[in-house]
Image 1: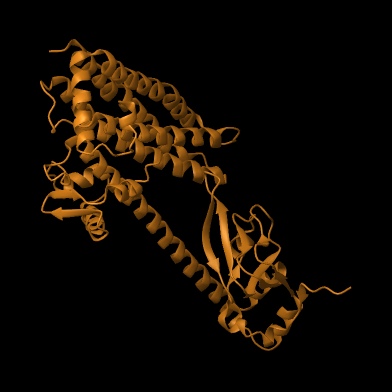
Image 2: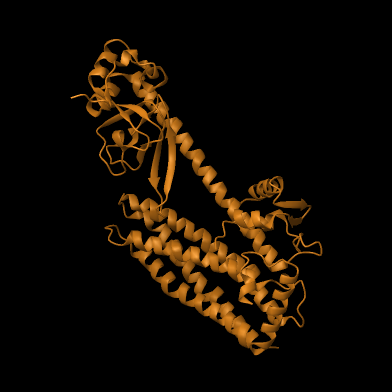
Amino acid sequence: MKKPLQFETGCAHCNVRMHSVFNVLEGEQLNEMTMHKSCSTYKKGQYVFAENGLPSGLFCVNSGKIKITTTGFDGKEQILRLAKSGDIVGYRALISNERYASSAVTLEDASICIIDKAYFFKALESTPKLMFQVVKKMSRDLKEAEDHIVSLSQKNVRERMAEALLFLKATYGFEEDQKTINVSLTREEIADYVGTSTESCIRLLSEFNQDKMIALSGKKISIINLPMLIQTANIED
Amino acid sequence: MCKHADHTKEIIDHLLKDVYPLLDLRINNALQCFNLGGSIAPEKDLVNDLLVNLKNEFHSLTTYEEKLVFPSVLKVFHAKKAKTTLPNLGDLLQLTNRKENRINHYVAKIDQLINNHLWDTENQEELVNAFSHNFVTEKASWNKMIQDRITSCDCFKKNYFDVARLYEDNSLNSVTGSSKSKH
């Protein structure tokens, strides 16, 4: 019976391999890897692996885009990162011998190879260059994850800054121009309300100013776009 | 001076001196003792993140209340005549209520996660109990007291509504847009 979703091709002839961690393999090593992998095509929206599943091998994306996602506290999907042609996915759970902590779902039609777990471990042991490539890949992904954490925490500080300005507006009201908050606070004092450093406070106020949410004149702060400020504070009805 | 003002001051002192320090202690205990158990259950990371969020939100709430909300409430009592410089209590209370809701949400999530787990959760359970009982009860009393003052205390009511009217006239009462319907 014909299997339209299965195809096999040799790793030696794979163009994508040159952009992946396997670009250090050659000759017999490539033939051996071809013997220990299988390739499949996936339709858009299909799961490559699912959260809590047990890894049986390493996925190498031949073509197409994949999202790596997990479920947040509120049940909402949180995209952790995206993978493209030449990327390996599912390596964290595989190497640490744990269940998948995230799911991989195709964003478009994709072809993906799965490399046998035992072979992959053996190849890592016998080929230091491959081990180094995998460590480099992990380091890059870790850097991306760290950047993501920083951007999330900064978003949180933006919300708190907007909230602080709303508190100050409610407490002190506006001056006669109906825009300027009727209080003069130092940047240190505002930072104390927000719970951030003075440097971050100065930077955030400057960003709000650039976004035309507020206007700054010395210690005075005018609210130019109140709806946008409320939206930034993430105050939901 | 209005007799209700004194009673309100007593409640504020009770919150700041008795209730909040205890809750702060519970958060610190829950956080500091959390990683001593040795268990590496994945839920522990989630609980730890929630505890940090709870600590930040609680600290933020108490800071705003101590520096802005409580002085504003007392100011409304003591004002002889409402002026534009009086605080907009309606907006302030809505902002603090939203922070209280976020705190209760974090506590409920922590409660869900620590149930049925094998690691020692005594400090987290104490935290959940303290927030579920002390915090919820005390804040409910506080909010009810404010509502009572708005409806029954003449000096508070007059200043509260005069300010609200001023803000509405100036189209300033717009934190959530819902204060108007309340009045």
